Image (cartoon, rainbow, N blue to C red; front, side, top):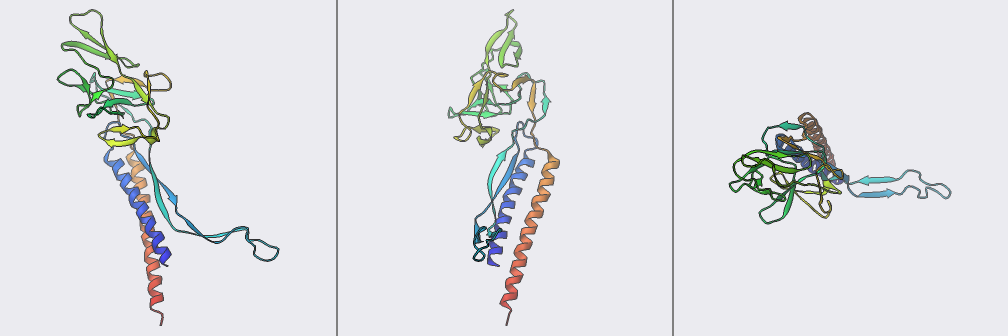
Length: 261
């Protein structure tokens, strides 16, 4: 009975973490470029009471073993990097990656972070920046009094001014890819950081080497599907209730044993 109490407690703890992940997904349903997470579980250690293949008599063997499990635990929260739907904004500084990859953002400490949120603008100095004021890599500076800015699918940024016939090339926005994007670490603020699990960032010209192309005047919506999340939430709630029911049954059985005269 004590084993059942501990086993059901691990199941309740695992489902609590699952609900936390689902709630974060739902909370970010309108977060630009957000990628939903999925909770993954592992079973815990087993006590082997009878090994399969052990001798049952002098000339026979057990063909089925007897093991008793000790519950479950959360092994990972995996980011699902499927693409969200495009949202047209007509803001010339907004960018969306259509395909694989991330845009680079320079953090205040100089570290390069990565994002799918292309809600960009220019600051007082003309730097192309995020909403938080972080510069977009490699550092695009927009001159004053421009008539129009054009960002091509390969990331080339050109500005048209009143005094020039030909456009001014301001640089090129690259797209970064990773061998294992699931290994990226979420740092908040729609920013991701490379880890040993993700591997080093691979800088590409947009549209080359399997990277996505850039779309000007659009941003990427969250890939969270509310209906799927609500379904998963109901399943997690029912799993939590069943584990609590097991704990209650184990408690009743212990009570029965204690009341034996």
